[in-house]
Amino acid sequence: MLKVQNISYSYNNKDLALNDISFDIEDGCFLSIIGHNGSGKSTLAKLLMGLLENTFKGKVYYDDVELNPENIDKIRKKVGIVFQNPDNQFVGVNVKYDIAFGLENHNIERQEMLKLIDEYSKKVGMNENLSKEPQSLSGGQKQRVAIAGILALNVDYIILDEATSMLDPEGTQEIVSLIKELNTKYKKTIISITHDLNFASLSDKIIVLKNGKIIKTGKPEEILNDEETLISSSLDMPLAIKAYYEAKKNGITNNKIMEALWEYHFKK
Image (cartoon, rainbow, N blue to C red):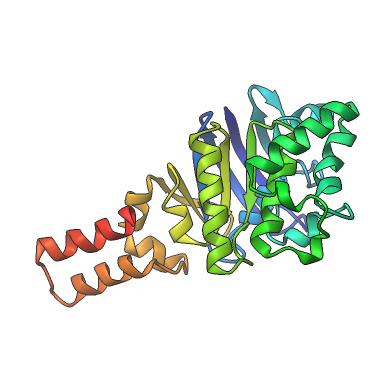
């Protein structure tokens, strides 16, 4: 379980990027953290990974192990992060060496490393691209490689920091399907930092951030049914949900129509 207790953080010791944030995530949960630009989403992602200086107030625990400088190596064996721009994560000359990079840092023996590269490149559908250079891959393929590198380390928690925001619709669908499989089939705990409500609606739970504070927590249906919160947070609603609210505003009260619009989004 991940426990975040009363976290506050400031980049300049004056303005709070995060203001008294608390939440728990059960093992195997798919959590989405949503909010407009500047709401504190990416700051929270970096903090959860231990990428910010240890100047925050509050506590973060992974399976009762506190995130602090003494435990950071132990924590990073449990947690992996996939960033917004996949190009920023490539360190190898080709796909094979990029997946191997994290394994080398964990002193995995060569034969075991080769087995892991083969296993997880197949798992993300990139085993036929191991010799390719990063520049030759599509955005979706690059994200698959980044995820393979995380999976090869056998982490329990995967943090996705706007992992689909730079992808085309086809690439986005590829990654969304893969993430759902990682959560449901392989029981990975997923923490998705996103402004994409279509993506967020697939999760088990959503946290809405605004100006560094949590303003609402609930299941996707609860969050998407709160028009005031979505509008005040400058979040772009999915098309079917927009149509649902427009129908309500225009006095369309036919239950079948309204139910169809709502169900269309969650069953499509």
